[in-house]
Image 1 (tube, rainbow, N blue to C red):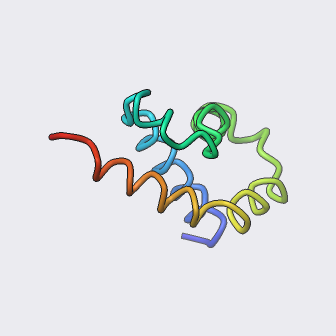
Image 2 (image 1 turned 120 degrees about the horizontal axis):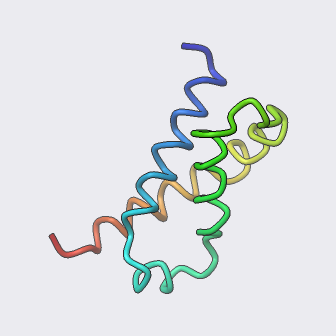
Amino acid sequence: MGHEASHRARVLIIAEAAKHIPNELKETRPEVPWKRIHGLGNMLRHEYRRIDSDILWSVISENLDDLDRAIEALLKEQPE
């Protein structure tokens, strides 16, 4: 799997995880662009040919680690 494919997979995993975070928890992190994460996940799943590789790389290189950490922290806060 090439780097681009593995980055796309990581974004998809994060977008899927974000769908399972309750809105009450999302509201505690207003700095996270939840709607944009959801939208990007949908584009990668359904409209992947329209994704500009440069834009995807910009999202990955500038935001992905922070988003990953924020979502992991919120998922840990959820009651089981």
